[in-house]
Amino acid sequence: MADIPVVYTLTVCPACDALRASWKRQGIEYQEIRVDQSQDDLDTALDYADTVPIIIHPDGRVEVGFEGMTG
Figure 1: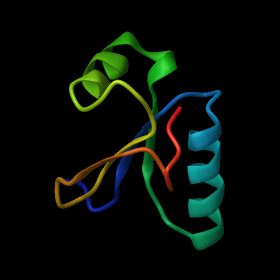
Figure 2: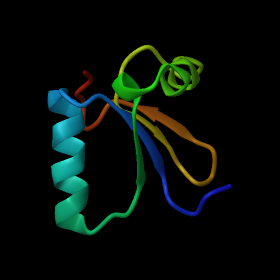
Figure 3: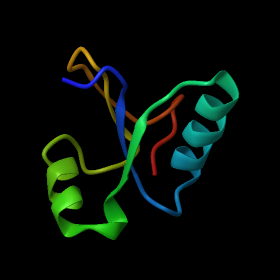
Figure 4: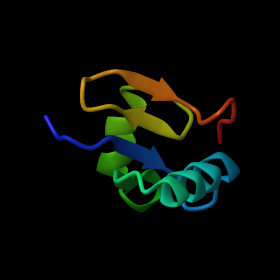
């Protein structure tokens, strides 16, 4: 399992933009997967939830949305 979070996002998504901006300010590293650029990635994301952002933490915990926002 990776030691950084994996985040499924959309290219145009206010909640995803907020997460990217906040985590950049905080220096949080993550792997971003934009589900609107690959059907395989979208299919994988849909196994977790049907809205973004979807955060997969290194411990396996899944979080949907960012600070109360979803896209």
